[in-house]
Length: 177
Image (cartoon, rainbow, N blue to C red; front, side):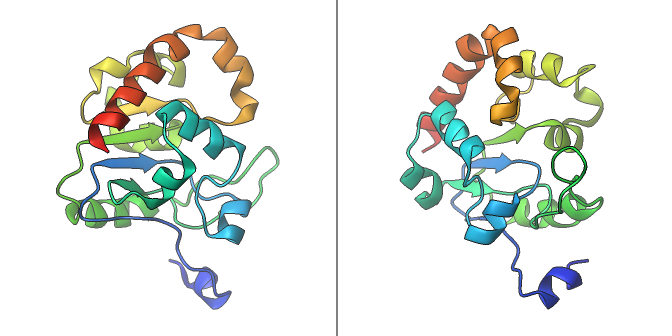
C-alpha cells in the first residue's frame, strides 16, 4: 500500500503514544508537512493550535496528543486542493494504533473525511450540521470544520462555532493535557 512512498524514501507521518488522551484526525499531511516532517505545519495548523488554546511546543511535544491523519502520506495535488486520502488506509491502520493507546478520551474529527469515517451514519446532512451538533458526539468525538484560511467565509457565516465549539475545545484540551 505504501511501496511508492517507501521507494522515494518518504516515511509515514503520524504520532502516537500509549499515553495519548487526545487524538487529532485530519485529512492527510500536506506537501509542506511532508517536506518538513511536521503535521499541521502551516496556517491551518496555526489556527488549529489557537482553537485548542495551546502552543506549538505543546502541540508537537506532548505525549498526550496523538496525530492520526486519514492517510499518513501526502496524496498529491488535485484540481481544487489536495487529493483525498487513499481508501482503505485509515481502515487498516487506525484500529491498530488506537488499540495501542488505551488512554484516549476524545478524538478531534477535523473535516469531512474524518467525520465520515468515524461517525458514519451518525453524521448529520452536512459538515455544518455535524459540527453544530458537536455536543451529541462528546466525549468520544469532537467534530470540527477544517481550520484552513479558505474557510474564513464559513467561520464568518457560523459565529456559533467561535462562541460554542472553540470554548468547548479549549476546555477539553486543557482537561486532557
